[in-house]
Amino acid sequence: MLNPNSLEARDIESVIHPYTNLDRHREVGPLVIDRGEGCYLYDADGKEYLEGVAGLWCTALGYGEKELVKAATEQMEKLSFSHLFLGRSHGPVIELAEKLKELSPVDTARVFFVGSGSGANDTAIKLIWYYNNAIGRPEKKKIIGRMKAYHGVTVASASVGGLPINHTDWDVPLPGFLHTECPHHYRVAEPGESHEDFATRMAEMLEQLILRAGPDTVAAMFAEPVQCAGGLIVPPETYFPKIQAVLKKYDVLLVADEVITGFQRTGEYWGCQTFDMQPDMITCAKALSSAYLPIGAVTVPSYMHDAMIDQSTKIGSLGHGNTYAGHPVCAAVALRTLEIYEERNILDHVRSVIPAFQERLATFADHPLVGEARLGAGLMGGVELVEDKATKQAFDPKRIIGLKTLEACQKHGLMVRAIGDVLALCPPLIITEAQIDSLFDRFSAALDDIEKTEV
Ligand SMILES: Cc1ncc(COP(=O)(O)O)c(C=O)c1O
Image (cartoon, rainbow, N blue to C red; front, top):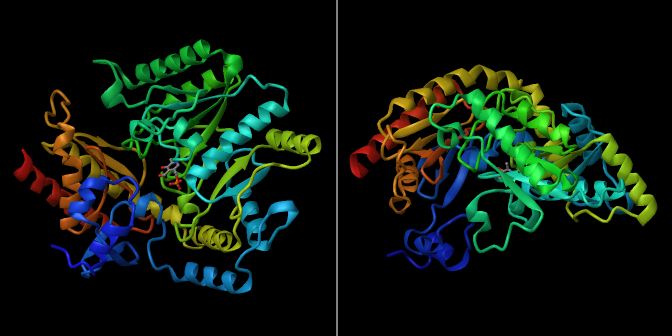
């Protein structure tokens, strides 16, 4: 019985938790986190947890980074708020936009700022619609997403996403959003199908979808380089080149959702570079500010920007934007984050620890509970737990094996993410090799516990 004055009891009485079983939460209550430092979190009782999932795939520089605290404090003291409406601007947002243009691997004429990953994808969808209206293609509006994709929770970003939990009883997807197959070889490939043949089949399925919908009505496809919230799904090597050939054929834009994969996570600065994508637009958030403050961004190519200028002439103004778009404190912290990535050679560091991370991850393929160890995504990976390794038979979802494994990890002082029965790992980019070892030792102990108690 909880003390009614405890934080746990007060949470149960007052907070609605996203992505939580609200009924179970009334019984088990929250895990109250008190503070963080580097790659570690500490709960209200002082118990230490190694951060295995960078918060929500976002705390790239870990916790308690003094430089970012300083950047926020200084900016807040100087100019705590200023907006971008009606042509107003400020130094941090200008410098941040310039920096993102420099870092972008694709044609980026301008950058549009938002407050989240969902907001970035929502804005990208609207800009694509606006663009096609501007250039006289009002029919070309349909947006393609993929099954198990996650692009956020606004009405449009949830529509392009393909996770049942974001659709069931939420009255989305909206009409005009189509979904193609998820490129997960382990679960979706036909018996004996090679990765190459599977990628070819995925591209053929996409083409069939576009032809059925009518190519003149299809505007864009959204894709995460690695489908993270869908269960850490790493596409076959030739998937994106094959997909892009189809998109080009029918003049369909490609948006790379880099909300998780951006900023060095995969061992290149952008996930699209690792996975051979040449997107028309990039959406990003999370590690843009190392999650110290909420900010997201959309890169806008020259041809789209030209059309937006024409629209402004015709309509009088760009009718889109949030109060907090390009918030000066968020922008100052994001700018400092990007500077720190360079000053500390975070990309080189990530590349130096990826082999250790991937090697330890690969060893879990032999664990009796593991159906697939999801390799090849840089400093990010997952393991799928199955009832029967040979037949790939999943556990009955009612047994909540993934959630129980997450709880066992927490018992062993490790934060992970459970996506059904997939356990996802995505530590801060600053993690050391010794900490990677500790992460997998704790993970292994948790899996062994589950094997003893659940199998
Ligand atoms: C690939 C991807 N896109 C978009 C989002 C949504 O971002 P946010 O939660 O900041 O709205 C997420 C969140 O995890 C994500 O993983």
